[in-house]
Length: 175
Length: 365
Image (tube, rainbow over all chains, first blue to last red; front, side):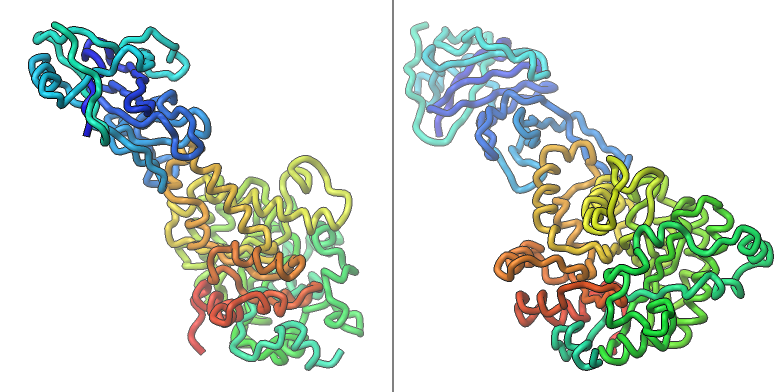
């Protein structure tokens, strides 16, 4: 398991998303209705950048016209062929599934403790990242690069994404 | 032709139980309906000189070998398949069928007088009961409904749908509005309420031209091009959510072939994955839904080379979809042997009787 500090909570406003490369994988981090999600940015269907798709509510129906729309469950819709994946579980409406990753919100002090113990690292400046706000995919614009080393302040909260595999590689920055 | 040869040609040499899922009965003329019509309509027929609805000639040209195979065309000039004794001698007895499901297409869809159409539909159903169903216990039949008015269709289904001989409602493949449309719900409710199968069968007419893009010129366009209309109706029924609205609904596609089914289902499954949000009531792969609810009569078989056809049958993804049909008296080039030859042994009884028995809930033996 490797824990990556990807930014301050305040860097990712409501409805925003962050695309960042972690351990060689492009990962999308979302903030939707106060919840945080992370998914591998690769549609299992044909490899499109899934996390550039629209964020939609869960929609099902008991019968024709009997819609049940649940905004509290969010899905990302692949921009290529429209397949929908649950942000929380990575599950589609059928047998396709994309890998979800846990996102934790940690206080600055806890982050510092984990970084000092080598349990978490920073996504460094070489990791390409894009930030966008607003749900519609069309508003996802390249840059600016936001994920880099920065001092941890106890007063802030941080987003920490956990990926399986090697432990974090980036050393803690000087305070 | 020798009866024995004929039997072999129709059944492919199969000697086990047979249920024939599609035989036709034809009205010899409008005269047989007169005893079942009110005086007003008898007068109307006399005054207008009405003989037969126009669709009948368009969909089944009288002289075509598809409309009647040469060996089944009566030498004395009578209308093919227009008498119970013909049906017995040509199909029921030589094939030894356990049950045969009779379909009567007369082209009512091309009439515009709604009251006359309803009166004729009622008369045909009464004629089917009196002249056929009540006279041979091997026979089952589809009841006829006026196809321009869902309320009238529902009323007629409720009127005669309880007769034990009627197991199905005949729905012409072409319709004024696609069958999945909510306009039709009253009719579908009646079909389900009476525990009948909806039999979508070649024939019918739309409110416009034969094809969705204009008039067909030749009979081959009507008959072979009907595949496109099958796809249209099936996607309508699926997309409009009939199988969710009516979970017990059973549908047959009759005289529409089946060799196109595999690729059709692939395409539907593929598109559903990206478009399912339009129709969220369709909560599973369309192929799964169709395999549960839909059955096919085999004629016209439409097989190509045997090795290719074997693959097509495998692509159906189930051995429970096909139902043997002689399609009497319609003429088709390929016998059921074409299908039997590419089926594993365990699937053959299903094709010849078991699938139809389950689908139409016909008694054992």
